[in-house]
Image (cartoon, rainbow, N blue to C red):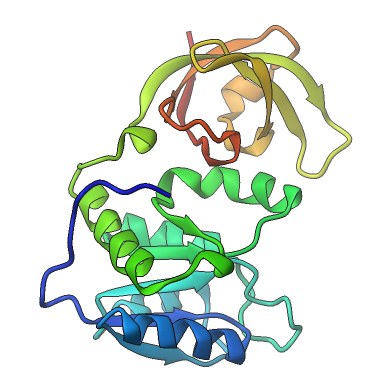
Length: 226
């Protein structure tokens, strides 16, 4: 993962560690400590999503969050980490999403991806990436985007619908990005006025980060009919 040149201010110190696996929290905390920051353990169970997002920002400067927060069945949380990081972003609070992705996770996270500046896999964690990732989040919240995260208005063409899936999917092509790549887009990402008549051949525009070469990292913001 590449980053623009940016750094954390000296006042940025305290980082909450959000994960339903206590051993993973301890492991991430060690990396955070080695990054020169202060880890804050967040044991469960967590409160409602709205209450937790407000609480977690108090006396903290940032967060590192797992995606599947109930994978161990211990009642840690009843929401997904992608939703947490999305809401942190909307509150202008820097946060990293740290998870191993499956194909299903890509579909689930896609609606949140616009608001997840940095996604790390646990095996890639190290102190430098943590500092750089959090610094990059701060920069994006100030409007300074990496080339692969900058949004561009572009044409989206629907190739097919997979309505038997849950959630229902549109298979789309981005001619301005790649005419050969097919991407799965959850229909519930799109506004009702667009999905009511959607079919193969439907075209619309959206804000997409066309500079990213990885289809899993593409986001779709502000979709609208011509």
